[in-house]
Length: 391
Picture 1: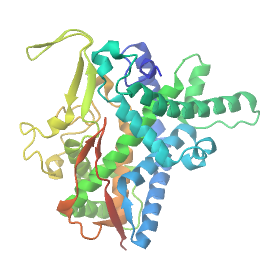
Picture 2: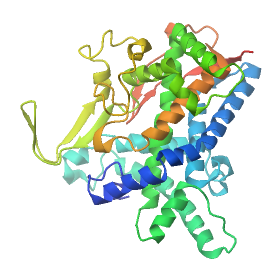
Picture 3: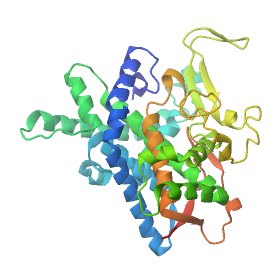
Picture 4: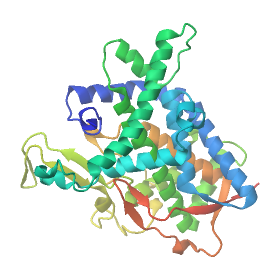
C-alpha cells in the first residue's frame, strides 16, 4: 500500500519526514494544543471510571487492557475527528471497537514481522508468508476508514454554507493542504492512531498488573494519590507532578516491560562504534528490553522496585540512555507528550477511585506475567481484576 513512502515511522530523516514531525509538534502535541484538550482527556477518563464503577456494583471482573484501549480509542478518535468512536456513524455501523482493535494490533504485528522477502527478493512475487496479503486486508481496511472520513469532511467544508469549523487534527491538516503544504493525511493519521492506542493501553495494563502483583507497592501509590488529591476530588493532569511515587511506578514498569522492545534505526552513513563499522543503510535495533534487565545498569534488575527512581534523576524523555521507552534523538516518539499525560492520568484515576483485588482464588504471585511479542510486548494473558468502591 506504499505506506513506507508516506509514513513518519519509516521515512528517512529528510525534508518530507521533517515536515511531518513539524506538523505533529505544532498541531497536535504542542503544550498549547495539549493544554487546550485537557478537558477532553478528563472527560474520557471519567467515562472510564464510570464504567468501572458500574462493574463494581455487580462485583464483575474488568479486563483492564480492554477498558484502557476503549478509552484511548475514544480519545484519539475525538482528537482527530471531533466525535466519539461510537457516534461516528460511518464507522460504528460497520465496525465494532473490538474489530478496530484487531485492525490496530494486526497493523503493528504485520509491520514488525520478519519477512523472508527482505532477505530473498526473488520470492517477492510469491509472498511465501502471506505478509503482503494480510497487510492489504488489515491496513487497507483501516486506510479506507480514514480516507472516507477525510473525504466526507472535505466535502462538508467545500459545499456547506453553514459549516462550523472543528478544533481537531483533521481540520488543521486540511488547512495545511489548502495552503499548499501537502501532507498525506490518511497515512499520518494511521501512524499516530496505531501508535497511540495500542501502546498506551498496553502500558496501563502492565502497570496495573505489576501493582496487583505487588500489593504493598499498590497501597503506597494509592496512599500517595489520596493524600495529594483527597478522597472525593478528581485527579487532574496538574496533580501528576506532585505524585513522585506514581511516576516512579510507571518508570519502573517501562524499565521491565517496555511496550516497544526494540528501537529501529538506520545508519545514514558508515559509522564507527566501539571498534565496529556500522555500514551505511544498515538497520540497527536497540534492545530496550535487554537494557532494562542489564545487571550492569540496574541492581536486582528483575525485581519491581519503583523506589529506585525516587531520587528523580532519571526521566523517560530520551536524555537518560538506560531508560528509553519512547526512544531518543530526532526519532523520539512524536506522541510522547500525549502518551505521558494519558497513561499517568488513567492509572492515577483508577487507583484513586477504587481499591483493586484479583478474582477469587488467584494470589498476587500467581498472576501470569508471560509476554507476547508482536511488534509490541503485550500481556499474553489479559489482566482481569475486580474494583472495590471505598468511601
